[in-house]
Image (tube, rainbow, N blue to C red; front, side):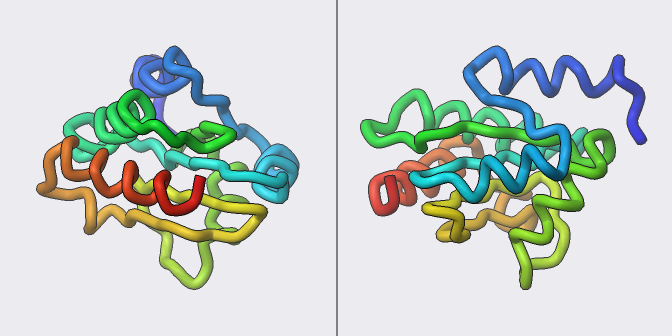
Length: 137
């Protein structure tokens, strides 16, 4: 478990921009089974979260004409029960953080794993998400 002092500013980067935190397994299930589209940003302390994942997600949401109905986030290594439950919805993909998932009507329709984030600029992550928003939102 990471210390709150380390995690809270990284959480705030998303929650200050309209992302709702998923903190419990029940919250995860209730949110993901909802009609429409839900973006889930699995946040983490790793450098690729700060360098491209969080900025890329924020760019995509800010610059896309179509947007998910719900913007959500949970923090790996901190919101452990919620993350475990999110990962059940991501099967058969292995655990990955950071990661970005788009669900439509309860089904996973787009997933960006850590290996697709590492070494890529935020603009590339944003472009990937904007394309997904255009297709599914």
